[in-house]
Amino acid sequence: MITKRIIPCLDVKNGRVVKGVNFKNLGDVASPVALAQYYSECGADELVFYDITASVEGRRLFTDILRETASKVFIPLTVGGGINAVEDFERVLKCGADKVSVNSGAIRTPALIGEAAKRYGDQCVVLSVDIKRVDGVFRVFSKGGRENTGMEAIEWVKRCVGDGAGEVVVNSIDTDGVKQGFDLEMLEKVCEAVSVPVIASGGAGCAEDFMTLFQTLPQVDAGLAASIFHFGEVEIKELKKEMLTRGIPVRI
Amino acid sequence: MVAIIDYGVGNLFSLGSSFAAIGEEAVVTEDPSIIAQADRIILPGVGAFADAMHKLHTTGLDDVLKAEVQKGKPVMGICLGMQMLFEKSYEYGVHKGLALIKGNIKPIRDVIAPGLKIPHIGWNALHFTGNDCPLFRYIGEGEYVYFVHSFYAADCDEAVTATASYSVPLTAAVQSGNVFGCQFHPEKSGEAGLKILKAFCEI
Image (tube, rainbow over all chains, first blue to last red):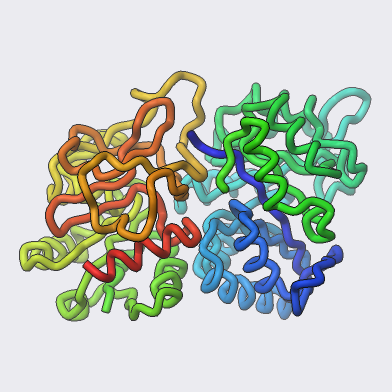
């Protein structure tokens, strides 16, 4: 049986991990390469590198660390951030990324997903979408969750999957940072709408939130989080052991 | 030396790095003379079957590969590269493969339980079939490896060395003489994957 995936997300700026990392047993806690190796050894099923740099120099540093990570870590790597054109896919894929996640780039250029899927295959294209409730309606937000696009979120996700997005990362702005659990209502709606894998993001505060996620919504394929892993609040090894105890299929 | 055949598809960076990680020299190449010198050959592949076969054929590397198989050199196809080893694929039409292993490539959709997602993507456990395969020398039954595919190898019972369960057993690995294939990505399967590549280098 296919297992549920646990995915740590690393925000990278100018080649360094940001958003705080707190590991005693890690020499250079801001090195994305060291952190990726650490997570891989702990049993992470996949890694997401999110490039939050805006400068050309920062982009170059990012591809350098991506190449170094891919030469040392042998689990799937997804890259996001600054993906606005097919050339951006090419840039990160040749440095060792397996999948590329598109967010604002797809909103600005709706043909991007279709073009990339045609060239690299659906399995390579991940739609990342920031969703927030506005007057009871799920709306797509862009620019890191700052701008309401006015688009209805479920329709947007369906359209992107129809164009060739092979996976969907659902970031709930409503639950992000609140640490009270994943947005189950939102995730259920997305799962009903599409038949590709759905990755839950935003809201995990403790291991129990992952149990609730996978036990309430077995149709969700993976859980993604950042700071709770970086600060050691949730240890991936322990989390997966507990999942197994609860009968949730997981790779140990 | 391992030759990783480069015919213009996919990310070969990780594959090259994974051999480096186990201390094996690997060269990503489209040069027939280097492929002929290599001790073993990897046929990688992602994307669409017809497109990949077309590229392999127009570069003439299909004949180069067949000649090396004839000489008895160990060859391993990975993911789409494994599927290309078979006779035919029913991926968007009917397309001829390399016919190095008997069998056909068919859609997963036709055999799995309704409601399961396609592609079959993520980590799944290997189950050995009893057809003993040297690739699995260093790993055990139930080891997890990483899959991404929407089609699978059918009509090839004799060659199947491992399966993965997705409501039904799907072909995960095959062997016919010196020709090997993995539907999963050993280069993305952590320690278990590296052990499979190491075993391949010892064949």
